[in-house]
Length: 189
Length: 189
DNA sequence: GTCCCTATTTATAACGG
DNA sequence: TCCGTTATAAATAGGGA
Image (cartoon, rainbow over all chains, first blue to last red; front, side, top):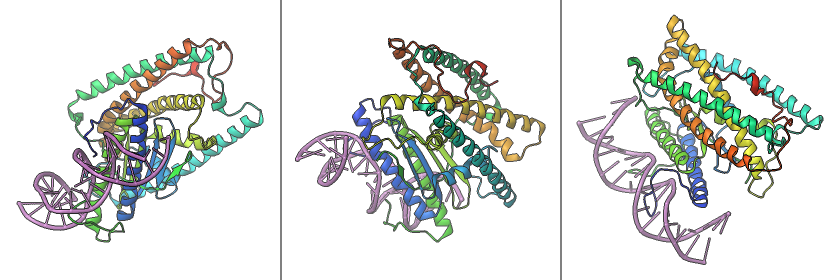
């Protein structure tokens, strides 16, 4: 949409990429706003710019929407498109699981906060302050790299295997998702 | 954008609202896909339709992006001055931690898949769990595979870069005091 | 509820300051 | 780098099948 049509592929020019990210992020957030206002749907968007800066958008507190989702995701409930509406039974199961899940998330969060506080008190700093420009890091990185390759090959095998199974041949089934909320959060601006 | 302009306010007619949600959801997901491809940005969208059905979209496992966001919140990472940009070091640390999380997510996801499959085999799962586990697994695995390759190249680059740094010879500096113990980790198994 | 069509409205790529 | 402007590409509201 512009003076010229551009191919949807990675932009290499850094500044152009930055501009595109800004404009399109704004566009998506705007669309999310409209969706929420028009249909009353909840929507949360979390995105990280090419520079690693976080931006979020939600019509409710981001975490509330995220938790609602996390509680269900573990059960692999299908965000399927053409299924129509869910049964009352299914809805209740989801809701129940959601409540349990929220409690777990809260507990986990508390632990992490405690830990961060402890680390700070002991003068060990936050984890991200740890120096990584050292030989050890290099070694660790190589280990991770290797582990990752191993994982990759496993996944490759798995994907390959699954692709050959008849009742799993839905390669062209689109990854369906629905929903949006918004509320904007921008730490760095 | 249509035959007539419509005001951005709540639609009361149920079926019309449903149609609008569907169309616009698709539009936003499409935009998100483009954003990711064009700029390489990570983006996760979680939304709930007016009927309460969840739909998500992400260029990586949703949990991975969500976690990246939540983790920053947890650790109280300072909103980084108003310079508009974060230090290169910090950015790298964050990115690196994110990559680690992706691996964690992969493991978790793998377990879920295993579980779903087991349940299906035993016929003890709910129909939607069994049904989706097959389809979702393939799509998700492909996504993970792609994310993996991306992460690998990033780490490769970093390893390469670090190899050239002279002042990094602190063998026993612990990489990250975050409870991760690489030596004892067995990926995906 | 689902597609498809297309008149219109929006989003936005390339510029200019 | 950050705002406007403008020509064009895309998204989509209302309909029809």
